[in-house]
Length: 157
Image (tube, rainbow, N blue to C red; front, side, top):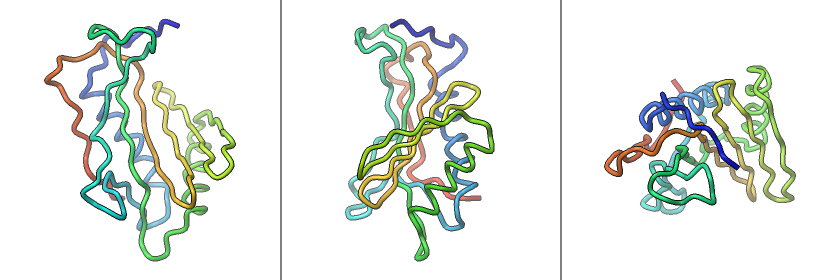
């Protein structure tokens, strides 16, 4: 399957817009919730600052179009409630009229939302904890020196 890239989208814009959509979701979550790339048990074990993934799995050449993706652990304070955060994220997406797709996964259900500008935000409930990720639409692959640099933590404002 061929996916037409957005010729006006760059890695910088894709990253910024992905973070904006994640931040928008975060603002609708219970007070004290934040997103972190650092592991809870070992903060030195961090998720990637973002990756560029070929849009077409059958074309892994250096010239293929890519999308930007980044993932975070969802964290909170002492009153952090996984179910309340999960429900608040889905409610926020619904109120924004973002189409939602739920995937039953037993102990690891996943819900995805699709923004009007082509981004996908996914919340994953795995074994009592949450993670959230964002993926941009496809764009022309940037120069190899143009590396993702997403923030280590996103806090509510």
